[in-house]
Length: 233
Length: 233
Image (cartoon, rainbow over all chains, first blue to last red):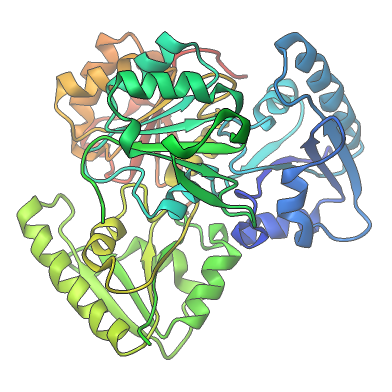
């Protein structure tokens, strides 16, 4: 009997925004894996900190922050191979994912490599988009509104194209793409209502008008929220 | 000292997909409010069932399923007034919201009526979109992909317009709009990869190819997920 691979969403950062199911799965899995930066820091591991018990085998998947595709593919291959060893030996593996495993998560790439070989189960989590909206007290979407979730990593024209039709916009992966994002929002006449939220649902949470944020000051883990329609008090 | 209004996301349905923070807030609030259908059935209340302790004052906010706007505005006015009475008397109120309070939730409408008068705090939750993605084992978005969240309640042309640019599409509020949605996806050549997920993360969860679903068979609480780009195993 092989083990099961669990993709466990641990929420946006606050360990209290982890679900009961995630806590249970973490408790029951002998092996816990998580993505980390090259120096070993892991926001996913930090979000799950109080819930990862003692005596676990921990697998750190080191990834560069702004990965070239080929480079990461190899890293994912190696990570998948590591996990496969434990799964084949019958050990359940929980892979921690900041936010939700299937929303811009590294889990999808590991899952793609192991699907069909081992049972896979995804535990959904609270996204940083929901946490950012909570920080601003503005809805992501109401009634018949559409919501576009767009990575700031796109080039200027595709970025604008993705934002044009939607009633509400959530821009992820802002970081060093701030200047381009500001140009696009200016062209759409949306700069005034754009809010910049960094580190939502962590101790460093901060909400500002986008106009008040400079590039030197822009975090990778920032979300920019823009409502085109109804303003909220 | 007035009480605080909490918008508490209780997740997509499974009581185990409630966060630790939601459980704590529910435990601490003496008043619990929730939206329900006209006959008093409430999916939000059901999702929170094991976490709502005894001895709470419960406020049922009855709303029609497919509301006319004026009609519901009056209902929201009355609900906000009810909650305001408790808040003014210094009692904290938890309003339960299926999924996340700021993603197509009724909470936003109550919040809009009480903002400025009372402290308001939002506890984000796991959305039915994340739960639906988990059910299909397909990512909502990876890498540089954009995601459009679109309500099927839109007319055919705006519906198509909202779907055109995005790499990945999540259609909410499907219910009686199934035939129109199928026409739009046909026009975009996307029917083959559209997956219909109903009651994600509940005992009645079911995933089907969209083509296999008939109108008589279509649930209000269904989500249709479409990936245009990379297919996953």
